[in-house]
Amino acid sequence: MDLPCAWSEHVYLLLSTLSFLIGIALITFLHSRHRLDVVVRPGTVPSPAPSVSVIVPARNEARNIRACVESLFSQTYPNLEFIVVDDRSTDATPVILHRLARRDPRLRIVHGTDLPPGWVGKPHALWQGYNVSRGEWLCFVDADTVLAPQAVATCLAQSLEHRADLYTILTDQEMVTFWERTLLPLIMTAISVAYPPTRVNDPKRREAIANGQFILIRREVYERVGGHAAIRDSIVEDRDLARRVKDAGYRLLLADGRAVARTRMYTSLPEMWEGWTKNVFLGLKSEPRLLPLGVLGALIAPLSMLALPLWFLAGALWGLGLLPWDVGPAWVGGVVAAQAAGVFLYLLVWRALAARAMRVPARYALTTPLGLLVIAAIILVSAYRVLTGKGVIWKGRLYRAGRG
Image 1 (tube, rainbow, N blue to C red):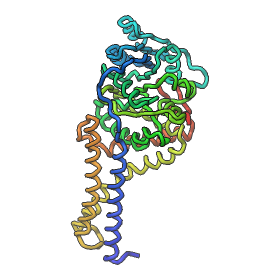
Image 2 (spheres, rainbow, N blue to C red; image 1 turned 90 degrees about the vertical axis):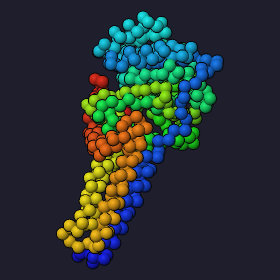
Image 3 (tube, rainbow, N blue to C red; image 1 turned 45 degrees about the vertical axis):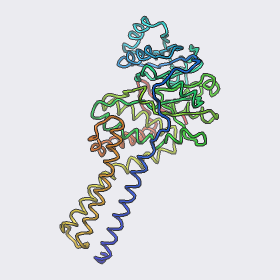
Image 4 (cartoon, rainbow, N blue to C red; image 1 turned 180 degrees about the horizontal axis):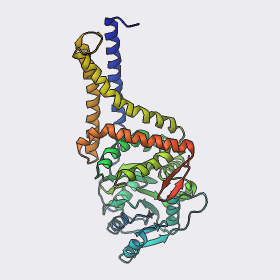
């Protein structure tokens, strides 16, 4: 039975107003979790200068390895050794490394062995690097990361200043192509919601994460928590190492290191699809509690992008008197349309601010609906692979499980 006109307009206005308030609150919440209370700025070399072993795992990194290693050679820190583990590369990575080794005797190349049973690629490569290292501190750096000359010195100085046992940074993410600029800012926001930096840095909170692109850890702490041998079956080894460190009562610190390091993870949509499907799959596999939340979020995000224009269109047609039934005064329809437009504009403002913070043109806020659709597809495909046990392929290796 149809509601009386006066009642129906109040119900519709109430529902629209509640949706407006919930939308504004949710958008604000999602974009207020990223604050970092420690910012890395180029500084002085700590004195005395403990020895540091920089360990880089490299599997088919011919595109990146030269820039990464050359940035290591340029470090101002005086007490360094460089270890690159060639993890069974099938491209030009070994050739490039041997050419670089002739330029600087501090570079040591470790030719990785086949994976032993129970191990996955990156932890095994890092463990091999650790076994030949001598430093009092271990610095794990991804092959797609380039460091500023003061990076190691500054990060070590801050580690000592804050008495951190594991010190990790968020690097500056290079985004060049359309798809990088469309997807990566949204993914970074999602990570900050799952792992708010202020909670990660709070010793009383359980949240723990590290960025494998740059991790600095005391050797004795690394050994006490079992190193990468203790997480040998983990692809999200950075997060799991951080967990072991924090759970053992040691100090974990996550800092904003965009001034001293930059990374370009993926350069095309196929690369991003493969890489993030792998990341999400392993994250969902190792944290089953996130599986229903991930699927729910993947369904809600695109539906909300569809609901917003329908919400606005219904209000606009109401306000213009073009609805085929009488639902009340036209001004109420105008309010409904304004509320829908307000939520969308509020979202665009936040996305534009997030884009500018990551040095992406603000106009990419307009790609938010498209980005959410692609990310939703990545999450759903990853969830399907978890539930069916199909696993994912990453750099020529099949992974079916992650570590909890």
